[in-house]
Image 1 (tube, rainbow, N blue to C red):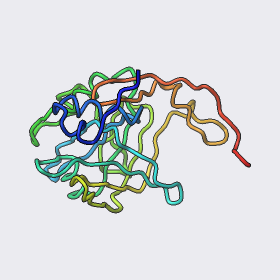
Image 2: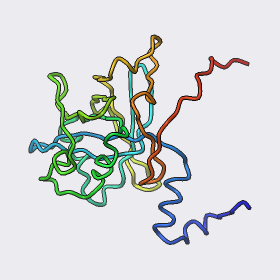
Image 3: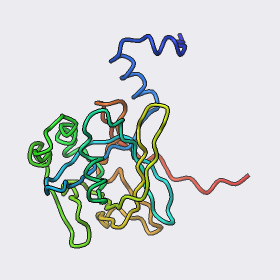
Image 4: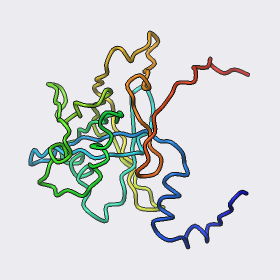
Length: 204
């Protein structure tokens, strides 16, 4: 039997039921850790499920930041330093990645608190997650306020990519499933991926 919910039904739901339903109903999403560093040199890392591709030339990615009704370390660090990293979450450390969603103080490094390892390069100041098989270094490009609910859409330009060459196909396609990279539905449910096949460019 198909369940029907009106907008009034949705708005009238118990808070956590509505949160779980609306966070999972849009389907599987990428699971990433975003790494930043504060002006006090405290390394921060937090899990996000809203990273999206914006374009390839120039290479741009975006993600949604929840409203600034409480302090958001990731946002404030990006605004202070301009640089951040996006790190794919793999099966080997997803429980530690999930723990970064806890509310640690701004003097606490989630890397240390959650058992993750910061990694730096000579050309990018924000910390990568060493455990991640695919890492992207970005520089803040622009942001947009979403008036409907107060969220902020942040866009970054990719300035560095770190990936195991065994994942790269000759045509540039990245075999994410080979690295055990996960997706997420809702706020707490993690899934493994499997390649079904690659289809040709569709034409009428």
